[in-house]
Amino acid sequence: MIARWLDLVLRASGQDGVTAAADDLEAEAALLCTDGVAGACTYASWGSPFSPAAARAALDPECDRGDAVSCLVSAWALGQEPWGTWSQRAPTAIDARLLAERACELDLPRGCVEVARALFHGVGSTARPNKARERLAPLCRAKEGSACGALGTVTIDPGKRRDLFARAVDLGFAPALRELAMMSESDARTFHDAACLAGVGASCRDLASLDAAREHSALEAGCHVQHVGSCTDLAVLRVAEGDEPGGLSALDALCDTRGAVEACARAELIRLGDLPRPHVSGELSPLDRELLDAWLEEGVWRCYVARLGRGEVSGAVSHFVAVAPDGRIEGAAGVGPLVDPPLQQCLNDAARRLDPTHPPSGGAALVRYDLFLAHHATVSFRPDDVSDLAPEELAVTDELAQLGPQFERCALLEPDEAAPIAVDVVIKRKGRVVVVGIPRSSEVPAIDTCVTDVLDAAHVEAAVFRMEGLVLVGFLQAALRSADPEGR
Image 1: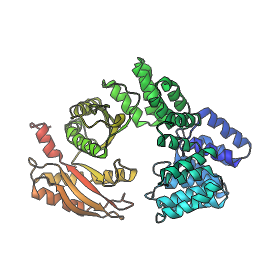
Image 2 (image 1 turned 60 degrees about the vertical axis):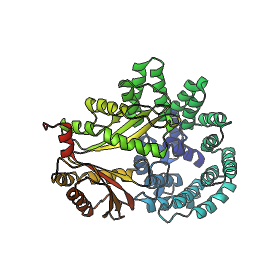
Image 3 (image 1 turned 90 degrees about the vertical axis):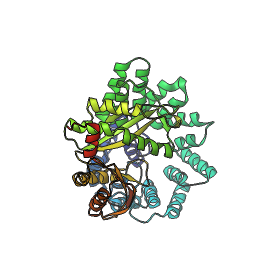
Image 4 (image 1 turned 60 degrees about the horizontal axis):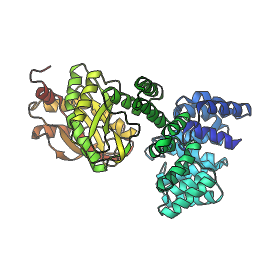
């Protein structure tokens, strides 16, 4: 019974990347509820799509009553960002680790695996990779498949990794099939096929890109188990095959009901005339990604100014750039409540004017860039240690954006001359901002001094851990004058 209950939670939440059809999950929850598993009776309140916070609220009482699986869900909800990945940055990391330990103490082997995973990532304590491996090894020997899989992910030697994933598969841990597929070019299709059949939606999506003859069936299988990426590719494939209304309708539904920002972006790209490419799994090199970000920031500046001219706005726009297999920039689309049709067209046009980049590895790519808008100086924060903004960095940027009016007053010192400025900073754990240097000047010493004074006096409540990075400030007054000499 416990095994079925844990399997329901894993598939409903997608914790391991294994999911199932909604009807199948609902039916299994009803059976478990009838059989006396109280936590399963709360299934309807977990949300659709699954909400970690909602599931935790529903299952916390069951954890208090000694249900190990419910304790594990609460541990994940408190200690993972994003879902499925333990993070020492989680503000409730200590509580998360204690809940995982409780699940382990209640004799749930998977709970003990999660304690080791949390220990490896330093969740609620100092990271201790060797200690984590020591905990996982006996669990793997005791035939806990998830332990073998977790041990494989933290093992460096390729041969040992492969052996551990193979053992995990033998013990019924389906996610390890995908790991084996990623390690073997010759057998990739075979492993992805088996993983797809087991409910690993990402492998269904990969199989579709590897085997043209099975493109439809693989994507349909992935979509059947509620894998958003497979559903997105399947909808784009419908457009590519001539059913544009049906494909766009499916993408809009994913966007509206599942919050799938990639589906939102790809629908807009198609409407803007870009090619409907079903598979966009390619990746740019870190250097090309950094260059693209820099080009975009400059290219979308006039779009930003024009949007401000149509009314005061504040918030973020997720900007998706389509890159062709040969490196050409095919277009871009913005996603978010601030995106109106003129801004959408402007973002797309600005991206199309960019020079080609190097061809992405793995084929066509879709690159995300977050653009922050405010009715004063525009402010963004780029941390040094990640390529994509995590939730904490987004919160920090949003808080720094509130300094926009103060930065704009700096620009008034020389409004015709102020160029965008980049400031190296360290944001301390308790929120104090320390200016380290100015790698890119505004070209006006008085403005540089003013900006650094504003930052030195700032306190960032969202900083839950030490961060280093660049604060980028662009001045609205100067931009308006250069874009519209007559003023607004």
